Image 1 (spheres, helix red, strand yellow):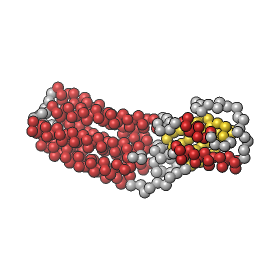
Image 2 (spheres, rainbow, N blue to C red):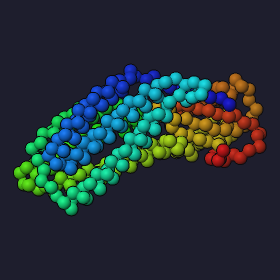
Image 3 (cartoon, rainbow, N blue to C red):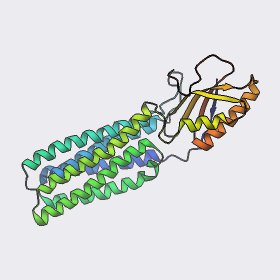
Image 4 (spheres, rainbow, N blue to C red):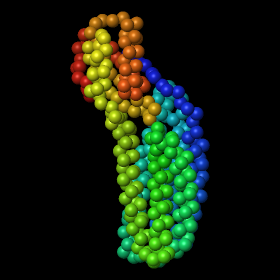
Length: 303
């Protein structure tokens, strides 16, 4: 069985430092909001604090996963901790949904029994949270485009920034119009939004943990591209999965049209690797060559 790699060089990693800054900011914001929410009696402010606390936990998980993912492979851990960031994204998405459910329960209770809220404190604390989370969102925005772990942390912060904007609007409505039921309504809307973004991330991370074929990969197109190459009869027993955000793997059997030498197969493997990388961004290729072997030749086989 032959195995080929194709890696792009990684740029200098600043994810750890950015995550530490956002962790520090969110600890300050969470502490201020808990104190302010208890003093003011604002459920939406306390719900925002709870979401911020989940941010702190998720950012710590993301930071640990980011560090673990860089550790080298060993005899007992042949892939190292490369899947740690996917696991972190799954945990973070789960906490988003759990927090949202808790907020919905509290919002329904408060709807039934609206309470007066010290809106002035709510307004100032929500402004502080918007500034802090807005800065954190800007710090992580670039990394969020290329890494599911950073994307989960980014989503936590972005949704919390939006929640703080909603709390600010609610504080203004309560101060000038005494619409205290708005506090519960905003809490409910924040929770529903958390479920929406959390479910999407949860689905994506679950698919990666289950080694499903990525959504943007069409296995039939992959098979057609490889089968066009000289000396290839049929590629079969195909598996394609994400080991991490950076590594897309293909494992397959390759039925050859003739009994070729090892050198000839190595040259063919280079051609296969080039096609797969250029057309499908697959950068890890493991091929088992075969000639006149009696086995199923289906593209997908339950191994």
